[in-house]
Amino acid sequence: MDRPVVLLLCVLGIGVFGDQNPAFDRTEIPSVTWPDWMSYLPDHVPLSALAIPGTHDTMAFFGGPLAECQSWNLINQYNSGVRFLDIRCRHYQDRLPIFHGVSYQRMDFIQVLTDTVNFLTEHPRETILMRLKEEYEPYQNTRSFYQSVDEVLKQIGERWFFRSDRLPTLGEARGKVVILQNFPSRGEGPDFGPPYPGPMSISDDYQVSDDSVKWAEVARHLTVTQNGDPEKAYLTYCSGTHWLLYTPESLARKINPRVLDYLNLKSSFASRRRSVGVVIMDFPGAELVRRIVLDNWA
Image: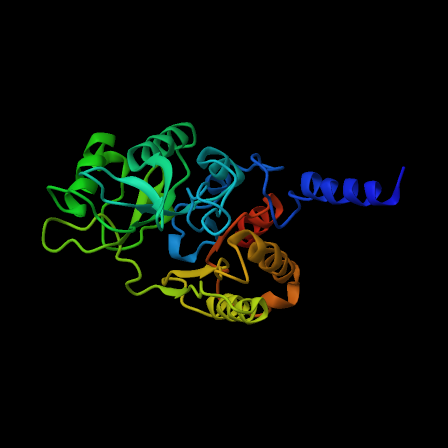
């Protein structure tokens, strides 16, 4: 076989077989699942103290390289162990379609919640943290974003949500969604959940011009988290992009393996006060998700 043909086959092979590894996954199905890991933890633990795998722009599957952030559908994310979602809704004609920037993601908020309730019905000792954000420009609405969210939650059923301005314990939240409210209520009614960012410590440097600088910030915040207050929520976004230098996928290929290496270094956890908190990723690998979960027993 000619050498150029061999090289081409090797390149194609990397594209086909190189998309799933312990830290990064561009395939549709995670290699390992752990759908009920929270059931092994005690009720009294505050959610703020837990190590929780999360996904950035959880439903961003369409729109091209600069918009796409995930490849596992929502149920596969849940089955892998992901328990923090980043849900972004455009307010469009009194509906709540999911968007990433200008890109429609072929899904509505009510379907996200329906899938979530179905998962919680099958796994009633789990809970879901859901950052809920208004995305892009509103269009032809007759009511507020708050009112549209309220209507959807009532359609799903109030019993599926932990409605409080504080983060609960795991026992209080089992079988429920805890909304982190990233939009104002403006006096229209009670908040849907704790304010985001509120008192949380969040690292989210998403404009990335140097992956080494991005990694340094991720490592810094993970270290700060482990020395922080167990009653305070810490969220570390490992995701980012640059219109010219990095897509979410190309950056995840560089950052995710470093996160896994960090978690595997026992020296990272000497004399710490708490877990690594909520770790939020694009295209996470199943082993990386599992390693974050295992930090709850480290």
